[in-house]
Length: 141
Image (cartoon, rainbow, N blue to C red; front, top):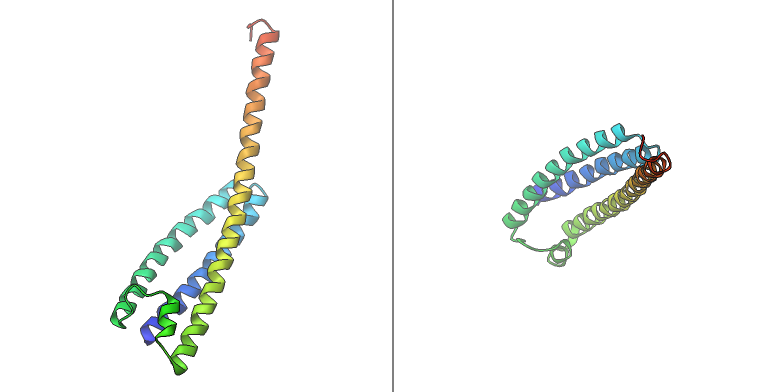
């Protein structure tokens, strides 16, 4: 059970790191700092690879404990006493950070989409102006 709890703690720590990355990405996106957004995305990709490894480790630990394919709630329902209380606290903490990550990620994605929409509009307006200028000059541009 100790290995399983350690994996949950590691997952919680990783989500805390991901939240920081997402907050940095959100701030960079708000300021249109594209290179900073890209740096954050690269750090995010590395963290996601680490997340996949930790999730695999979690699956192995769960299987060793006889909880293969069980949700955290199902695991809690099959534990009691101090182990139950410790797992419940760990699961609640992890769940909190996962939700916070998702909220921050959604905000960053929205800002990036808004910025992309602005860029597309600017390009479209520039193309329309060029077409209008060309028409006004009789195609001599």
